[in-house]
Length: 249
Ligand code: IPE
Ligand code: IPE
Ligand code: MG
Image 1 (cartoon, rainbow, N blue to C red):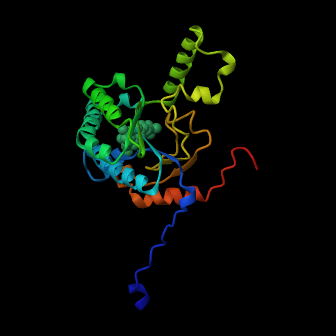
Image 2 (cartoon, rainbow, N blue to C red; image 1 turned 90 degrees about the vertical axis):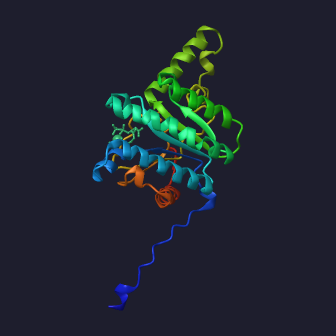
Image 3 (cartoon, rainbow, N blue to C red; image 1 turned 180 degrees about the horizontal axis):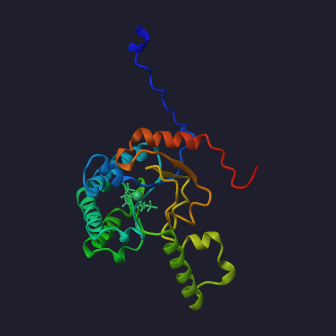
Protein backbone atom coordinates (compact mmCIF):
# COMPACT_ATOMS: atom_id res chain seq x y z
CA UNK A 1 0.00 0.00 0.00
CA UNK A 2 1.43 3.30 -1.10
CA UNK A 3 -0.22 5.02 1.86
CA UNK A 4 1.80 3.07 4.35
CA UNK A 5 4.98 4.39 2.76
CA UNK A 6 3.93 7.98 3.16
CA UNK A 7 5.29 9.15 6.45
CA UNK A 8 2.52 10.66 8.50
CA UNK A 9 3.34 14.31 9.00
CA UNK A 10 3.61 15.17 12.68
CA UNK A 11 1.11 17.75 13.87
CA UNK A 12 3.10 20.91 14.26
CA UNK A 13 2.71 22.72 17.55
CA UNK A 14 2.29 26.43 17.02
CA UNK A 15 2.58 28.47 20.18
CA UNK A 16 0.66 31.67 20.72
CA UNK A 17 3.39 34.28 21.16
CA UNK A 18 0.99 36.53 23.07
CA UNK A 19 0.35 33.94 25.76
CA UNK A 20 3.74 32.61 26.77
CA UNK A 21 3.88 31.68 30.48
CA UNK A 22 6.13 34.08 32.32
CA UNK A 23 7.31 31.51 34.84
CA UNK A 24 7.63 27.76 34.34
CA UNK A 25 8.66 25.49 37.19
CA UNK A 26 9.75 21.89 36.65
CA UNK A 27 10.02 18.97 39.07
CA UNK A 28 12.89 17.17 37.37
CA UNK A 29 11.87 13.62 38.25
CA UNK A 30 12.61 10.17 36.84
CA UNK A 31 16.39 10.18 36.59
CA UNK A 32 16.69 6.98 38.62
CA UNK A 33 14.07 5.11 36.59
CA UNK A 34 15.64 6.30 33.34
CA UNK A 35 18.95 4.78 34.46
CA UNK A 36 17.37 1.56 35.72
CA UNK A 37 15.67 0.95 32.37
CA UNK A 38 19.14 1.07 30.81
CA UNK A 39 20.86 -1.00 33.50
CA UNK A 40 22.92 2.00 34.47
CA UNK A 41 23.67 3.32 37.96
CA UNK A 42 21.23 5.99 39.19
CA UNK A 43 23.97 8.60 39.07
CA UNK A 44 24.13 8.18 35.29
CA UNK A 45 20.48 9.15 35.25
CA UNK A 46 21.29 12.33 37.15
CA UNK A 47 24.09 13.05 34.72
CA UNK A 48 21.72 12.61 31.78
CA UNK A 49 19.32 14.90 33.65
CA UNK A 50 21.87 17.70 33.46
CA UNK A 51 21.82 17.40 29.65
CA UNK A 52 18.06 17.89 29.78
CA UNK A 53 18.61 21.06 31.84
CA UNK A 54 20.84 22.44 29.08
CA UNK A 55 18.26 21.69 26.38
CA UNK A 56 15.28 23.00 28.29
CA UNK A 57 16.95 26.18 29.53
CA UNK A 58 18.07 27.06 26.02
CA UNK A 59 14.64 26.43 24.56
CA UNK A 60 12.80 28.24 27.36
CA UNK A 61 14.98 31.27 26.75
CA UNK A 62 14.31 31.07 23.01
CA UNK A 63 10.55 30.88 23.56
CA UNK A 64 10.65 33.94 25.79
CA UNK A 65 10.06 32.43 29.23
CA UNK A 66 11.26 34.95 31.81
CA UNK A 67 11.68 32.64 34.82
CA UNK A 68 12.53 28.95 34.89
CA UNK A 69 12.55 27.22 38.28
CA UNK A 70 14.08 23.76 38.40
CA UNK A 71 13.60 21.48 41.40
CA UNK A 72 16.94 19.74 41.73
CA UNK A 73 17.20 18.62 45.35
CA UNK A 74 14.50 18.61 48.02
CA UNK A 75 14.82 18.89 51.79
CA UNK A 76 13.69 15.23 51.80
CA UNK A 77 16.32 14.02 49.33
CA UNK A 78 18.89 13.82 52.17
CA UNK A 79 17.19 10.50 52.99
CA UNK A 80 18.86 8.94 49.95
CA UNK A 81 22.01 6.79 50.19
CA UNK A 82 25.09 8.86 51.00
CA UNK A 83 26.74 8.02 47.69
CA UNK A 84 23.80 9.33 45.69
CA UNK A 85 23.60 12.53 47.72
CA UNK A 86 27.27 13.25 47.22
CA UNK A 87 27.01 12.45 43.50
CA UNK A 88 24.23 15.06 43.26
CA UNK A 89 26.33 17.63 45.13
CA UNK A 90 29.29 16.92 42.84
CA UNK A 91 27.11 17.29 39.77
CA UNK A 92 25.96 20.70 40.96
CA UNK A 93 29.55 21.86 41.40
CA UNK A 94 30.52 20.40 38.03
CA UNK A 95 27.56 22.08 36.34
CA UNK A 96 28.55 25.54 37.55
CA UNK A 97 32.25 25.00 36.93
CA UNK A 98 31.52 23.98 33.34
CA UNK A 99 28.58 26.22 32.50
CA UNK A 100 28.88 29.44 34.45
CA UNK A 101 30.87 31.34 31.83
CA UNK A 102 28.42 30.35 29.09
CA UNK A 103 25.37 31.07 31.24
CA UNK A 104 26.78 34.46 32.08
CA UNK A 105 27.56 35.18 28.43
CA UNK A 106 23.95 34.40 27.57
CA UNK A 107 22.68 36.86 30.17
CA UNK A 108 21.21 34.19 32.46
CA UNK A 109 20.51 35.31 36.03
CA UNK A 110 21.11 32.51 38.57
CA UNK A 111 18.89 32.48 41.63
CA UNK A 112 18.73 29.83 44.33
CA UNK A 113 15.74 28.69 46.34
CA UNK A 114 16.72 26.61 49.33
CA UNK A 115 19.06 26.52 52.29
CA UNK A 116 22.50 26.28 50.72
CA UNK A 117 24.30 26.67 54.06
CA UNK A 118 23.63 22.95 54.65
CA UNK A 119 25.50 21.93 51.49
CA UNK A 120 29.15 20.92 51.31
CA UNK A 121 31.29 24.09 51.43
CA UNK A 122 32.46 23.74 47.84
CA UNK A 123 28.88 23.53 46.54
CA UNK A 124 27.83 26.52 48.62
CA UNK A 125 30.77 28.54 47.30
CA UNK A 126 30.06 27.69 43.66
CA UNK A 127 26.45 28.74 44.12
CA UNK A 128 27.31 32.02 45.80
CA UNK A 129 29.77 32.76 43.00
CA UNK A 130 27.24 31.96 40.28
CA UNK A 131 24.58 34.15 41.89
CA UNK A 132 27.01 37.01 42.39
CA UNK A 133 28.48 36.95 38.88
CA UNK A 134 25.10 36.81 37.13
CA UNK A 135 23.06 39.08 39.37
CA UNK A 136 23.02 42.09 37.04
CA UNK A 137 22.30 40.13 33.87
CA UNK A 138 19.14 40.88 31.94
CA UNK A 139 18.19 37.49 30.51
CA UNK A 140 16.15 34.55 31.70
CA UNK A 141 16.16 33.88 35.45
CA UNK A 142 17.23 30.32 36.25
CA UNK A 143 15.97 29.67 39.75
CA UNK A 144 17.52 26.47 41.00
CA UNK A 145 15.65 24.85 43.89
CA UNK A 146 18.36 23.07 45.83
CA UNK A 147 17.86 21.79 49.36
CA UNK A 148 14.43 23.32 48.90
CA UNK A 149 11.23 22.42 50.69
CA UNK A 150 8.00 24.39 50.49
CA UNK A 151 7.21 23.85 54.17
CA UNK A 152 10.72 24.80 55.21
CA UNK A 153 10.46 27.96 53.13
CA UNK A 154 7.16 28.96 54.75
CA UNK A 155 8.47 28.25 58.27
CA UNK A 156 11.54 30.38 57.62
CA UNK A 157 9.36 33.21 56.39
CA UNK A 158 7.18 32.98 59.50
CA UNK A 159 10.21 33.03 61.80
CA UNK A 160 11.77 36.02 60.05
CA UNK A 161 8.49 37.90 60.17
CA UNK A 162 8.19 37.15 63.91
CA UNK A 163 11.74 38.45 64.36
CA UNK A 164 10.93 41.63 62.42
CA UNK A 165 7.75 42.09 64.44
CA UNK A 166 9.68 41.72 67.69
CA UNK A 167 12.18 44.34 66.48
CA UNK A 168 9.39 46.73 65.45
CA UNK A 169 10.31 46.43 61.79
CA UNK A 170 6.84 45.31 60.75
CA UNK A 171 3.26 45.80 61.96
CA UNK A 172 0.70 43.02 62.03
CA UNK A 173 -1.71 44.83 59.71
CA UNK A 174 1.05 45.27 57.13
CA UNK A 175 1.33 41.52 56.62
CA UNK A 176 -0.61 40.67 53.51
CA UNK A 177 0.03 38.15 50.73
CA UNK A 178 2.47 40.40 48.87
CA UNK A 179 4.42 41.21 52.00
CA UNK A 180 4.57 37.56 52.97
CA UNK A 181 5.83 36.61 49.50
CA UNK A 182 8.75 38.96 50.00
CA UNK A 183 9.98 36.72 52.82
CA UNK A 184 10.14 33.64 50.60
CA UNK A 185 13.15 32.44 48.60
CA UNK A 186 11.23 33.42 45.48
CA UNK A 187 11.00 37.09 46.51
CA UNK A 188 10.46 39.24 43.38
CA UNK A 189 9.79 36.19 41.22
CA UNK A 190 6.16 35.92 40.07
CA UNK A 191 4.27 32.73 40.97
CA UNK A 192 4.72 29.92 38.45
CA UNK A 193 2.10 29.94 35.70
CA UNK A 194 2.87 26.36 34.80
CA UNK A 195 4.34 23.50 36.83
CA UNK A 196 5.63 20.53 34.87
CA UNK A 197 6.28 17.11 36.37
CA UNK A 198 7.62 14.33 34.19
CA UNK A 199 8.17 10.67 35.24
CA UNK A 200 4.51 9.75 35.71
CA UNK A 201 4.18 10.94 39.32
CA UNK A 202 1.35 13.35 39.97
CA UNK A 203 2.21 14.98 43.25
CA UNK A 204 3.77 18.21 44.43
CA UNK A 205 6.49 16.70 46.69
CA UNK A 206 6.87 19.84 48.81
CA UNK A 207 7.51 22.12 45.82
CA UNK A 208 6.46 25.80 45.83
CA UNK A 209 3.55 25.19 48.21
CA UNK A 210 2.72 28.86 48.64
CA UNK A 211 3.45 29.88 45.06
CA UNK A 212 1.46 27.14 43.31
CA UNK A 213 -1.94 28.45 44.48
CA UNK A 214 -3.09 29.14 40.90
CA UNK A 215 -0.48 27.35 38.81
CA UNK A 216 -1.52 25.11 35.96
CA UNK A 217 -0.11 21.57 36.16
CA UNK A 218 1.23 19.44 33.34
CA UNK A 219 2.25 15.84 33.80
CA UNK A 220 3.95 13.42 31.48
CA UNK A 221 5.23 9.83 31.68
CA UNK A 222 8.52 10.78 30.11
CA UNK A 223 11.53 10.58 32.44
CA UNK A 224 13.39 13.87 32.92
CA UNK A 225 16.57 12.83 31.04
CA UNK A 226 14.39 12.26 27.95
CA UNK A 227 12.60 15.59 28.28
CA UNK A 228 13.24 17.73 25.23
CA UNK A 229 12.22 20.86 23.38
CA UNK A 230 9.15 19.18 21.95
CA UNK A 231 7.83 18.25 25.40
CA UNK A 232 8.29 21.82 26.54
CA UNK A 233 6.30 23.02 23.54
CA UNK A 234 3.56 20.47 24.27
CA UNK A 235 3.29 21.64 27.87
CA UNK A 236 3.09 25.29 26.85
CA UNK A 237 0.58 24.49 24.11
CA UNK A 238 -1.69 22.77 26.64
CA UNK A 239 -1.23 25.65 29.06
CA UNK A 240 -2.38 28.05 26.34
CA UNK A 241 -5.63 26.11 25.99
CA UNK A 242 -6.49 26.17 29.68
CA UNK A 243 -9.02 28.58 31.11
CA UNK A 244 -7.52 30.23 34.18
CA UNK A 245 -10.34 31.61 36.31
CA UNK A 246 -8.67 32.40 39.64
CA UNK A 247 -11.97 31.72 41.36
CA UNK A 248 -13.98 33.93 39.01
CA UNK A 249 -16.37 32.76 36.29
C1 IPE B 1 14.91 13.22 40.24
O1 IPE B 1 15.03 11.92 39.84
C2 IPE B 1 16.19 13.80 40.77
C3 IPE B 1 16.20 14.07 42.20
C4 IPE B 1 15.20 13.91 43.01
C5 IPE B 1 17.44 14.54 42.76
P1 IPE B 1 14.90 10.71 40.88
O2 IPE B 1 16.25 10.39 41.39
O3 IPE B 1 13.88 11.01 41.91
O4 IPE B 1 14.41 9.58 39.91
P2 IPE B 1 13.38 8.42 40.26
O5 IPE B 1 12.14 9.06 40.77
O6 IPE B 1 14.03 7.55 41.29
O7 IPE B 1 13.17 7.72 38.96
C1 IPE C 1 11.01 15.53 43.87
O1 IPE C 1 11.31 14.26 43.42
C2 IPE C 1 12.26 16.28 44.16
C3 IPE C 1 13.06 16.64 43.00
C4 IPE C 1 12.80 16.37 41.76
C5 IPE C 1 14.27 17.36 43.30
P1 IPE C 1 11.36 13.01 44.40
O2 IPE C 1 11.68 11.83 43.56
O3 IPE C 1 12.26 13.28 45.54
O4 IPE C 1 9.87 12.96 44.94
P2 IPE C 1 9.01 11.77 45.52
O5 IPE C 1 9.82 11.11 46.60
O6 IPE C 1 8.75 10.83 44.39
O7 IPE C 1 7.75 12.40 46.01
MG1 MG D 1 11.90 10.66 42.03
